[in-house]
Image (cartoon, rainbow, N blue to C red):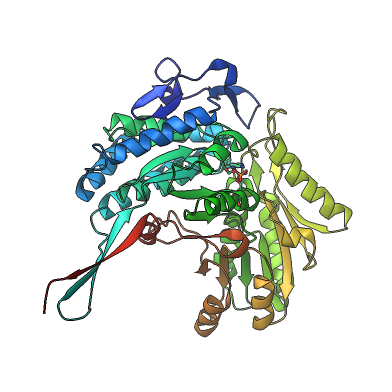
Length: 490
Ligand code: NAD
């Protein structure tokens, strides 16, 4: 796939953004960006060393006592709005770039760029609407709680939704007046670099946003361990999340961890299956299952198990996999490693005798160098089978059954993860009991996910992480409460 103009090297030579300068990458340490659909190298990015990370953190720190630190909340909002308008004008090339770098269908990439805009616009508007408090206290005293930025915030981003994850974490941080140092995933950094270029064109103050690309064990570790940062926002795997939290603990700073999931979709006998089945299938095959909130466990009431299983089988048999431009149900997986991890989970399930309920197909003529994998649904998966327990991060659905409501809740909660749950029932009282009984960060009732949902706080419990991003709640996380008590006399 050819690269859109926005990242054409004649116009844009990716490097590290430090302060307001793009620092050229030493070609000897550049990392290849590989198209997941055909294995072709489409660009290269820098592999930052601790030295570049140091420079980025120092540039961010300087900005806090320069123009950025003096920018009012209203003008921070205006800066985000100017950035948003440049993104709006470049939607199509940004979507093409995201699709080429991640392999996702072009319509999914277009939606993602729309979500970037949603975040920038939401936090542009919110920047001067997040208020402190005045508290009742003793006579002669005034007591208030002010909100202040953390200072320098580090943002470590995964490869599955790089553009929207970038906007999701950076927009509220900037709205609250922090200075950001971003480390995108080495697997997909191009949209982050292109969006950063637009931020610079929009006139964002020097040092408010800094970007260092590179590996997790190199640039990522150097950033999370850096003494000069005041907060870490991390989205990625639970294993890396533990390392990030340990690094944050070593220098006593807060962190927000958005990790993985094994999210249940719970279907009761009175569910509207015409509504439920398409949403359940989309919830697991979106971006080939490489989505933290993928609904990978389908829990079905025994009474309707056969009916649901046959509709899931039909839906999976209709799924088609192809290139981003073909815009089918799924694209390729991100890289060879991810393909072999997901393939190993499937082979293990087949060796244990699990039965395939339905399976999608690859479009004819795909380049064999692409990381193709057909979506699969497995029937009657035992509760403790690895396929029912572990995050696969691929388009693989496990179907299980439950006896009654208490069993459904117990089964849904029997997981170290707790990110999202879907509940499908027409019974209003049951909807409320489930909403309260499920141990997770968000419950969707008769729907799953949404077109964007920037307004909705998002995050997990347990192995899915802690802290919340999105919505107004993100502004609490991206700031510190300072209590000020003043005695003015009796
Ligand atoms: P990952 O943990 O391998 O990488 C995430 C980021 O961390 C990348 O930028 C990587 O370079 C960096 N990193 C890796 N090792 C590091 C280290 N030692 N120190 C500092 N940084 C390091 O995760 P991934 O493979 O990119 O993403 C997949 C995982 O992310 C899945 O488990 C998925 O569920 C989760 N995820 C969660 C959410 C959410 O919002 N909860 C969203 C997307 C992805």
